[in-house]
Length: 183
Ligand SMILES: CC(C)(COP(=O)(O)OP(=O)(O)OC[C@H]1O[C@@H](n2cnc3c(N)ncnc32)[C@H](O)[C@@H]1OP(=O)(O)O)[C@@H](O)C(=O)NCCC(=O)NCCS
Image (tube, rainbow, N blue to C red; front, side):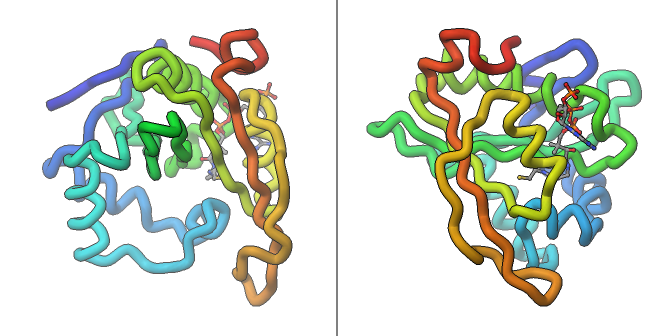
């Protein structure tokens, strides 16, 4: 099992057991957890369940993002809550290695995932949710073509206070019309 999609500087590979230890050590950054809206710790069981879900391909398709120069895992991306009849899914992207932030790796990953999602998995709509205090994350989603469609008022609790949860969407039509990042 290995690389499934390939970009200029990154490769997206399926999740295998051998990668779990490296991936787990990368994920131990609480600040990034909070930016991604996650408050629970990683446990052996949550890792095992994550691995199992990634193998099934029923409601999620998941990849590890690898820097092809060093062959190191730098993050994860995937589609989850896939609803085939509705042609919808949620999109997720976390670059866990901060050394790779703001250098275009997120855009490169998303271009590959849009191509795969719209042209192979036949999605019509993708959605993401971003916590209000993740200002750079919000900028990022807009930069690749997502549009805000509403806010869950005080929908997230972290750092002792409530924050809005911003819901964003991306439609196949916008992708085909060239209104988003493309591969
Ligand atoms: C958000 C994230 C996915 C963006 O990926 P990235 O590789 O850092 O972003 P890119 O370099 O591809 O940047 C694309 C755009 O995002 C915005 N952006 C990204 N990082 C930014 C930063 N630190 N400051 C300001 N804008 C930023 C810019 O608009 C940029 O466009 P530009 O290059 O034309 O100016 C990544 O930084 C990350 O995983 N962060 C931590 C976890 C997270 O927030 N995940 C999303 C949860 S909803």
